[in-house]
Image (cartoon, rainbow, N blue to C red; front, side, top):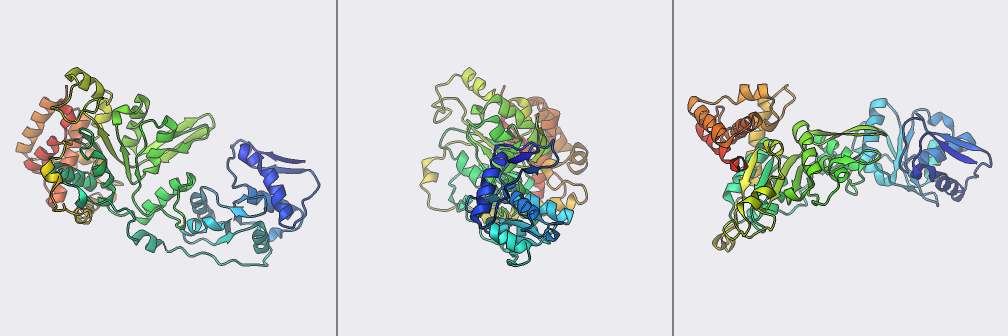
Length: 477
């Protein structure tokens, strides 16, 4: 008999067959006795194949084939194949962080997960390729070399993404708006006909954001590790994520969820860019569910199996056609004004209030498309963005806020004071456009970012005027 107790899922229950075969095929004798594997605590559901290797080690220790003295503070995880090889598993990075905090050592992991575990630092990592390697190490007969992770080299490696703003023809207004968005971490929505360049512009936004810091890279990599998406050979995600889910994505796939909560696309875009093309085509449930991560930077998923909170501090970029038919231009559109209004009405006012910049993206004239002169490069734009971010970092030191878009109401009143002429302009905009209190604050935050890009401490009327121009959808009835 071989029984596993403690709320195991299907993968954990099936481990008994993998463990038995791996032990026999590794040259060890499998005990012909009743075996009970207890996964404590009993009320927490266990999932995945990472319990295979520790189960096998526990059985071998119980039969005296593994010395128990080296198991007191060791942490072991890995999946076993039938021939005894140790296969990679998900979620090694957060396990390594918990291992370091708890003082467990060594951490025995599959060889393919060694770089991921070593990225944590200050931890003794032992990579193993087979069950035999694991037994030899725990018995002191073999000491595999502990991997060394060159985190600094990973973070400074050149980007593999070849997209650059220098390839974009025209759209000077949109480029300026995206620079402002990158400088202050503001959310953006673009409205324009098909083929105008909305997707092209969105894909280049991540390239002008400041590089990930080590703490940010670890936060992103933890989510990607749990999802099994970490790049091979690297223990960290070193570039700003860019996620572009299709409009047919499910609620759980985009927001996160499932019977056992798992992170969705909004969490995979943490510290990066979430691009949602054809925004009105997404389900109404998904669009309204975006309001929590846009406002709070995290997603809380509640299920009968438990409640999980996933980070979701991303920069949102949405794109939409002006009508459902996707007509080539406003002039050539055959849809009635009522049809266009109905199509865009799927984007609720509370959702639009959480988006700072509303851009109209017209089709590019042929003369600009045929021009040979390149535009400004992403690296040149990123330098200005980093200077503006540095001003914000200095301004918000000790407040827990790093960028203008995340200022609280009290901070906005302190750092976004405007002169009398700008206040009159803002009051007129609130009256004419019907801005809500949240929309009013968004204008002030964007104006603060424009002033930071200009290198000045005080917001002027021209900064407020430019910020008001980016509230195009507020003009719609």
